[in-house]
Length: 190
Image (cartoon, rainbow, N blue to C red; front, side, top):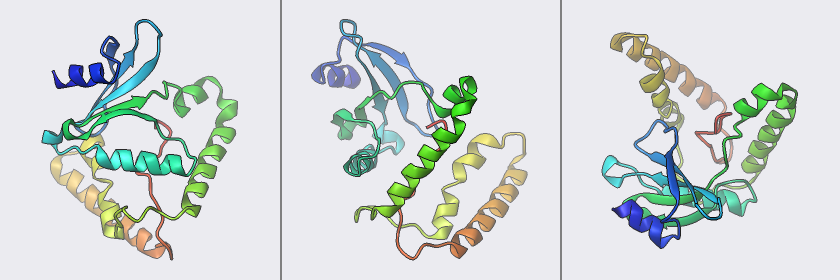
């Protein structure tokens, strides 16, 4: 298979494979563990036939690393087939760690805020698309598509329209004087 060939070429052909939780996309993630060394990595399978494209992920990861910020190392890539072999950051999510050691919460969130401030001080890369407030508000679509199942379709549409209109209005009021980079998936579980 394409995945087996990719992993073999990357030197991970003998690794065990364990599926990981997905996200709000067609991507699949598989944790790999080499049998001999115990090394771990993550395979991202982002099928181009489903509209996925790994190239923006690669560009953003490399940009963040160029700013000395944390992003997974890209160990191997096959963008034509939507495959990336990534550094595995493990399972120590904010929420998981803080549930066991809540006293770390101020430290963790201060570090996250510091990271965002550092990112905003750096100019965004010239290849990064600009978004209007309306486009930014529309980027909240997955919230309504994935989390409002208790409401019928008409209610979901009404809630989506109301929230997105209010968000667009707020974004127009705080539009920065200079462009800034926005990380859509910057949250405690990521």
